Length: 306
Image (cartoon, rainbow, N blue to C red):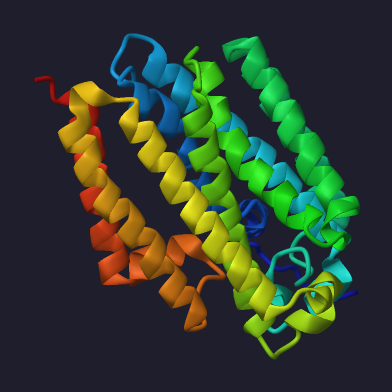
């Protein structure tokens, strides 16, 4: 008589562990830490003092979700494109796609779904928001394919992506964006991008091998761009302040921490930091203090009436 076949009972926790792990891997591949950049959608409605109006907060929250979906779609496509390079990078090899936790097919399917969600969802909130989401996707995807290999244009493409975030908040809440607002945002974006490139250039590890465009930059040129963008951003901010005479005290005082923030950030970058702006801001006490001080003074100018 044949012995009964040995069977193994699979615990319910074992059966559910794999889908949960896959879901966590997919979420990490979307780079949720980078979603903090999309808080820039708050800039225009907060500066205009309309964030508390009925319906505006909901539309801006929707714009945040739309831009998170669009940016994550881009990150997924970019990581699929760079998967071989990332696997030999000391840090990027831990990304889910490079580590084999998420297949390239899964990543591309999720990227397509997020792209459709961003454009479709944006169009439902406001037709202009759908257009901004589509423009952001076109810009960032073309950057991954073409612009990243062209000196200077790669910096401008990334900076344009930063500018589109506050623009998304503006169109979602139907706010006119002044030229001063656009100039401050644009030059500020160039400042941050130049800082990141300078920090990458200082890295003597595998970064120089992975990003060929870096070989064509010089530290002196990037520092000059960093300084020029900081001066231009500061001048544009002062120009904007001059157009707000009714709250000149609050806005005038906010110039000090704004300029101080640019100077401190440039100092940290020159010392070797700057590859992750969101982490740098939270790690440096002076930079964080300047950020909070500026926010208080700026919001005071917006919401405290004389």
